Image (cartoon, rainbow, N blue to C red; front, side, top):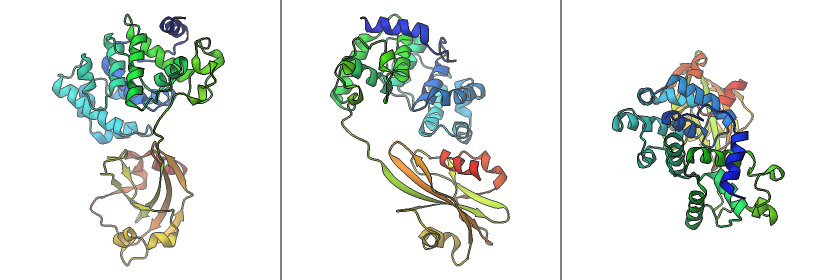
Length: 346
């Protein structure tokens, strides 16, 4: 069985019709690749359509305020992608005269573009012979060819890159790369893969040796840290306050309610004793009206346990980095999905 020919035959019959397929618009392909990272197509498709409609050219994306981009991105998570999207669009405008670069090296140099994304864009938009290697590809190739070298090791990355390049259909690398990613995501899934319907069932080493649930191998397991957030929804004459996160983290640039981070989930008396509470309210006696049930928000390396406290005060807060707003205007701010979930249920 010829791996590449078998894969391409399957793709011609079973491929999903998606708006960034069958086009050579590198900018649109780039948007789709960035949006679909760590995202299911069903979830990402409306975001792709919204970005293409609002920012049909790199120059429009480049000059847009970052707050507008983060707001349009809201709900997708991994917000560094949106910030990098904005910076890369400015590079395209300033360094490439608003035209998406056609050289692999120039594509790779764009902020937020790694080897996988550069290969996808170069092959799909310009027909350049660069093989994609992402999580779907690691999984499919490790199982079909029985490779147990850790995918997060130097040797493993080298081995998979070489194999992917060897299998690449250089006559139509864009179509081949899309076929490889699509088959991996639909059939050779991380859990409960559809091995009975797999076109490679007869040659799959992992299936023959009962290693499907063991491959691919990762040497370093991610340690999940627990964090505890106490958000304060402060009420004063029908006003409330939010602040923009300045920390260099995944929520940088997004807005949130005043936050007290603690070592564990706090009670009302615990919150009142915190340093932040005393700084913000001093000798005033705000009234705690309500406390939400805990909200759990899982990120790649951490799990956030959050509770929202509704506070009523008769003194206007004066923190310099807080933004006063009405409750009716909260939806105009770009906020993390965690806070959006809470507001949806208020």
